[in-house]
Image 1 (tube, rainbow, N blue to C red):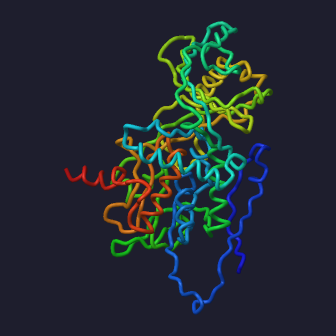
Image 2 (image 1 turned 180 degrees about the vertical axis):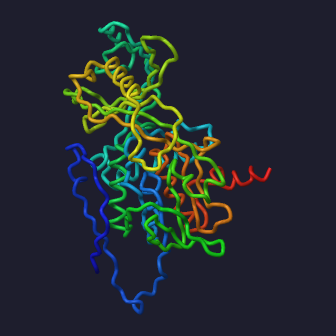
Image 3 (image 1 turned 45 degrees about the vertical axis):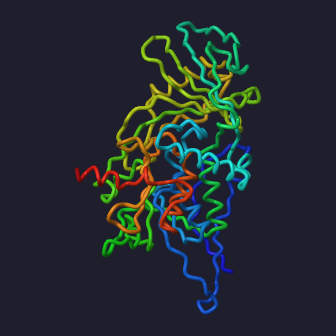
Length: 417
């Protein structure tokens, strides 16, 4: 056996509850069998472009099922929405819509992956009780406290009303999305031979209508029999995709707080109807306590231009300030001085023209696949998307989920009309 070093992906700081994520092994173990000894067929070479949750899940399931996978990422793994999302998971919230089967399959895959990868310790997987709560911001410096009616947890001591349980520990859960993505990639690299390449994918190399690999901006060529483009809102960078469909971006803001009394914060996710003191349209922020002791609060979303570099995405100060007011109104434990601000951030969520994910082979280009447009459900639907893509690439069809509704060919059909 040969030990071959591969390019490590940069880790950002992680909470102390997960110290093992700071020092992963960055080695691939590759077989040194001579051709005469190896009677098995050569593994299919696949290049996956995009180091977010969709690309990493695809690389994981491809490699676990025998493919030789190169993952190509422009900046750093989980540097965009996959590192800044909330990580909320729901079994049945997409029921009645086109994503229902994908969401259900993926929720169950999250559960099995957590068992396989020790997700509760590795990336904060845990079931949650989820509440819908109405909150009215006071114009005075002191807010009236909650009347503690119904299932409102004790740490929510602001003016919360009309509580309603909308998810149980059987139907809602959470992960820390950045840790989930990086844990999955570490497993894929260490156990299944995935190689990570940092570089900007410029184009898909084709010959006679078939995919031959990916050319990077610096001229490097990654040979592959199949290419999966999992680039989120950056999908339009590739002409083979931009000429077929439009993926636009929704800019979502979030803050991460660390309360002094983190042990007082129970695992209850909150979906708020929030009425600002100055009046106007109510907001719909979300609050996710994490097992790390942090509390993640998100909201303030709007369509936005997609910068060329994900590192260039910066939050709007007014949106961050609004989320801080939400935090302070909801709980005295989240007021400035009682909670440290760990992050003020924004990310761009990829949305398709018809609000349905785009998953499948690109029409007219054999061996070129796309997986994008997951909107706010990317973390939830990452595992089933990756598993289905692996089946499609290796077997020619997906069995875990019927991908016909997500086929990119639907846009080609619309163009012909």
